Image (cartoon, rainbow, N blue to C red; front, side, top):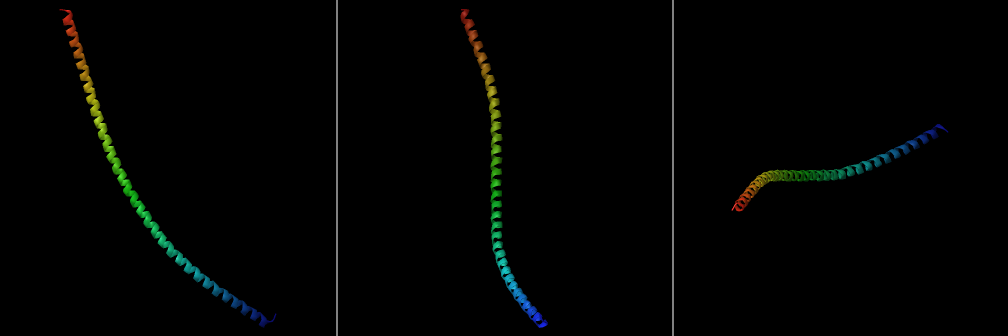
Length: 120
């Protein structure tokens, strides 16, 4: 192969490389445009997802606060019921004691009446 042929092949190879390079630059430009479009779309989705998550977190916090308030109210009612139960149990014990004393008194009265009749 002569020097002129070698140079011609080299120039042909350079043109091919320049053409490939130009094609790669175009492809890269299109890829960059697609990436930018994708990032813009994802930014909108990410913003939407972030806003939705924030709304969910706020809603959950409100629900938790309502549940805590209900639980506190239930606990207070339960404590009051237990207090009333203790009072009623104490009252019932006093009443039972009184009934026992009255019962004893009635029995003594009946015995006294019976003894008085048998003595007549």
